[in-house]
Length: 224
Image 1 (cartoon, rainbow, N blue to C red):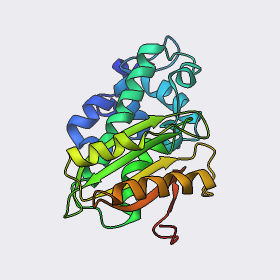
Image 2: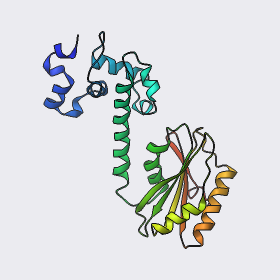
Image 3: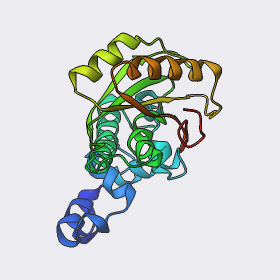
Image 4: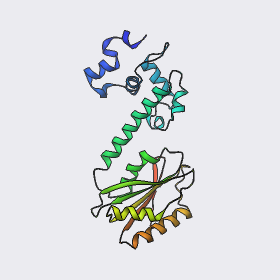
């Protein structure tokens, strides 16, 4: 039965208006994004089909690609893009909320970057530029590579630190493999950037490696 024939109190949009958005299930929220269902499935049923592909795990749904979503019967490119856009807005909102306070720990950095890096199939290397009060001035992606490494230009990293008048920097990259083992390459890159920053009285506070829901900190491990 199409949603238009449901009891008015059971329709997602009307339910939201009457009871608030928190009253809706995950399937009902996704149904609103979808707008319509198929000939055989309502938008809510179609949303349930999407959730079933990840065991109703929204974290896993956040890893889905457009092609993954399109494997669900009834989901075309437009609907897949809408879902991915909504998930990305949620990630960015969380990131924005976290960034309002100054950086005080490696866990804070992990909170900021896990939504950005944890689900990626490739490696990215970011630098966080900090003020004297440890507030984030900017965070910049400096390279993007394959599944195991990226190519960095230390001169550009230091140049941006000087342009931002940064007092300190924090390095962040991900391990798409899921491993949190600190490689010799990771140590070498860290030391190279640390020594270059030191020439300009810029401190390297940490290098945080992000994996799926986990992280390792050079500072916490005594590697700096």
